[in-house]
Length: 164
Image (cartoon, rainbow, N blue to C red; front, side, top):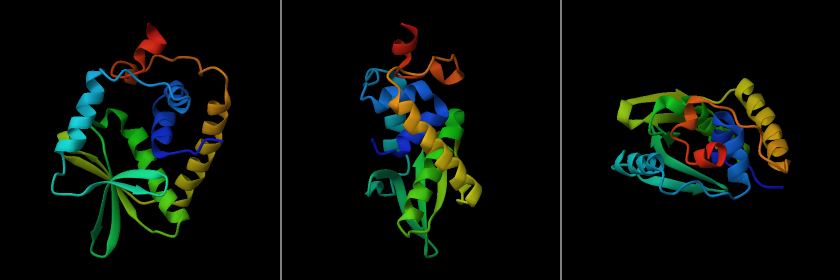
């Protein structure tokens, strides 16, 4: 069984078909300009911070300490995929908690100059566990879930797999 990571959680909340593609090692269009924009926003933002922390199986964008408390951050290029970014960061908070590390989170939208602070709670943990069970079922399918036209299809790097 494949280990579930933060990207899979984000994809689950954005598009289950994208999740299936990623889990089956299907590479998105690397020339997609929205991928480049996301990478650029991530590189150019928060330059004073150390970035990309591999903690166990997860890669967290930003980790810092504030008044003795651990803060983990997830950088997103826009709030268009806010829900998936929030759940991805909640997954990181849960992952850390499972390993005895207590932290708070911030989903960061540098181009919009905003952030969403997050604190993990029991209801979110239950939602994540339900999502992880469903992710395992989606990954185990022999074919991707049916395509659905959603607003996130336009910038998606897997768009040609669904609409070519």
